[in-house]
Length: 253
Image (tube, rainbow, N blue to C red; front, side):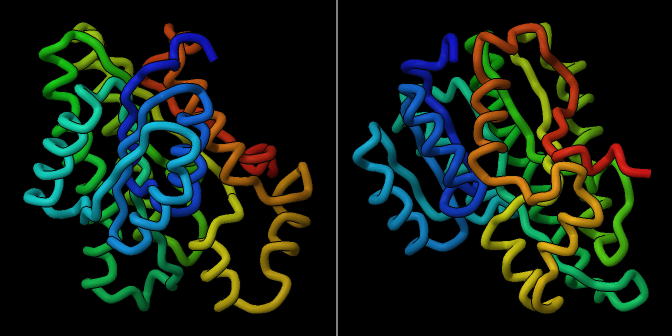
C-alpha cells in the first residue's frame, strides 16, 4: 500500500492473534516494527518468528500500567527513530453474564481495553504532535456498536474506545495526526478459541452459521490488512471513524 515503506510502527498486543498478524503485515509492507505483549516469552517468540521479514524488536508491557507504558514509548521511539504509526491493539475479553461479573473482572477488562488504549495513545501522540505527523489506529469491535449478551464489560470498554477515537480525531487532526478505529466482528484468534472451547464443541461454527452472512469467522490477516490500509496514504482522508470488518454480522436483523 502507498506510503508505508520505511515507516516505524508500534503494535501493542503484537505478540499473538490480530496484533501478531498486523506486525507481520507491516513488515511485509516494508515497515520497521516494534511490538509489545503481556508475556515476555511470547514477545521473544514473536520477534524471533518475524525476524526474517525485516527490522523488528519488542518488549513485555502491561498497557494498563503507566510506568510500563512510559517505558514502552521510550523504547519504541528509540528503536524506530520515531513512531510514525501506532496500531493500538492490546486487549482482552472474558465471557460472563452481567449479573455474575465480579467487580475485579470488570476492572481488569476496562483497565486493559480502555485505560490501556488511552495510556498508549497519549504516550505516542505526544511525540507525534511535536513532529506534526502520525497515524493512530485504535482497536474497538462490533461489540462497541451493538450489545452482545455475556460481554457487558467488554462491550462497554469497546464502546468507550470508539468515543475516545472520535475525541482524539477532533483534537489531534490539526496536529497532523490521523486517528481511526477498527471494529472487527468474530475473528478466529487464540483468545476467541479459548472462549469458544469453554462454551462447548461447535460454538464457532454455529456462531458463523447463525450470525455472519458470509458464513465464516474472519481471520487475523483480514484485520491486519485493514490496519495496513488505514495506516497507508490510501486512507489519507479517513479520520475519526470506525472501520467495520465483520462479514456482514451487523447487517443481520
